[in-house]
Image (cartoon, rainbow, N blue to C red; front, side, top):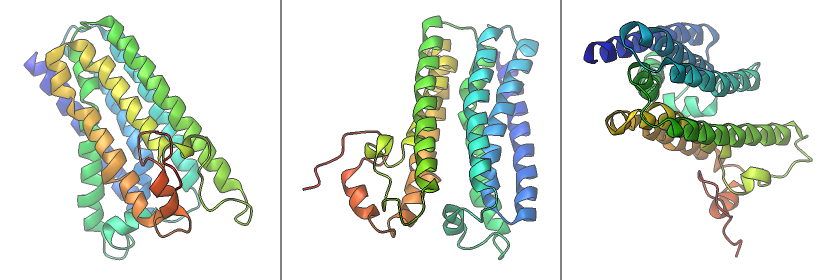
Length: 270
């Protein structure tokens, strides 16, 4: 079992590292670190495929679950990568990364990008893939938890997709016709419903891949959804975006009455 775990984990790490090296080269060429956002989902899908293919070769798990997880990752991560690629096409650097690096990539910040973005994102992908790795080398202990995880994943995909759709519709309005802030739909209850939905996706995958394998795999992989939630809410997600959004008209008032992450009824405007 130990050999199988190390082999699967090592191969996933190798694939993720190669993905980040290629992404760093592309980022250097186009002058934008934000291309890593597209790679994120593709690297996770590659990790899921490695687990599903290699798991049965080095162990004797219930392989059907790994392919269910491949399907879940393909839908959620593929949708996210496609959405981010369409949104960023033809645009400059994401302000979050400019702030994180202290300037543009090609203005002497390549080393900063490697340390603060590509290495961090690579480690994050590997951590988040731990439930996929666990599913590749263990049998299903509680089948009902696999399907409970699928249900939580589905909820996350719906929330994330609807949130992204509402944001795209808001941005498509002419500047002189749209409100100062988007505070309708899901955005009335959370300032970042798309990030919250993405967190739900990975808690669902942990339920199906980690907890459904038993208590020991569950505890060993719990860092995955916790790390993902931290990144989405604080490290490179909502909190970092807030630093630039707070300077926009109307946003501080919106932030004062609206939950940052978990959807919740807005506070009284009084």
